[in-house]
Figure 1 (spheres, helix red, strand yellow):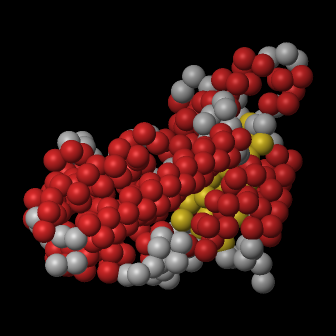
Figure 2 (figure 1 turned 180 degrees about the horizontal axis):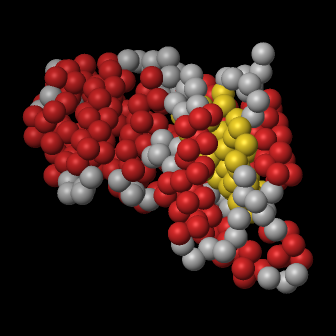
Length: 310
């Protein structure tokens, strides 16, 4: 009996080794993620059995990047389950102990030659060290990426309304909306006299006005809409599957809601439609703002839809 017999026993009994691991690392509240982690651990046991059969070391053993990808997948489940770095290490240490316990229980190591036992023990330690190091690196990368995304989202989110800001709207959200929809209404709501109120020192009024406008727009728009703060006194909305006429009626509902509430301010609205008024982000936003300027010139809280292009 040699090390190939040990590898065959481990590979053919991966579910049993997995269950030994679960005895140490059971009890996660998120059943779906925990099931994914358990499945990844079982596949990793099979890979370890393959590594035992190979004469290669961890530095030369290659499966075309599949092993590192599997470790990255496991790291994703670990992160989703709320593991920290210590929890990641504990998962892989428990796996090493489970493999050793399985081999001790299944095979009589005293009947094996000293070289075979030493070879198995050495490869187990080598694999355990590698997977722990690779798992921590993958876990750290996920945490770092999440932190970067959170920082970017915080920087691109308006603090007063909690909505995406103009840069995020025009750089990411509107291009994505255009790509995903054959028809799209783009609307911008502007508070009349906002700048004058701020200049006159009525900051509290201005903050209340933009907050109320945001609340009414978000509450009026369909669930499929994306809303964001477009400027100091402007809220923008993208509404998939809606044309200019329907967008006009949505704007009327916003104005009606505002007039029925405590707000005592007027808004002007500019509306453009994709692809009627522009096939790209720049053209669409220009037409929307042109319609808004026309509404502002008319005054009195008007709604203007961009002219159809021919």
